Amino acid sequence: MMQAKVLIIEDDKIIQSAFAAILRGKVIILSAFTIEQAEELFESNPDIHIIAVDGEVPRGTPTISLVVKIRKTFTGPMIAISNHPDNRAKLLRAGCDYETAKELLPSMLREILSSQAMQKGG
Image (cartoon, rainbow, N blue to C red; front, side):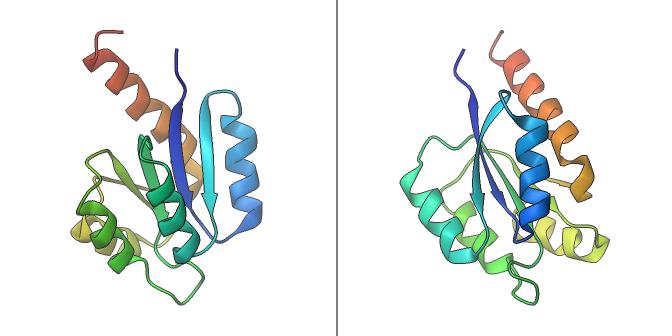
């Protein structure tokens, strides 16, 4: 079975490393630490299944316009990841489908992927 490709837009290298360790072997992770990297990875990987995006990347730079831009062509699930509920709410309004605190992202990814697998009949 082909592994799902997940773009994680998060500027904290420690958090990105933790996601990579927890999700190793389960999904292919593309890590973006800046909005520019996120745009490049998104454009060069048309087979991305899920996008998880922090509220500010780097800190102080809101990602709302990035979500709006990606949402114009991306139809898959987008997850707002932030430990600030107001940031998650803004990202939901901008086009994200789900929201979660950062530490809960791995379990949310598993949930979304298993429900997608069920919908596809396996």
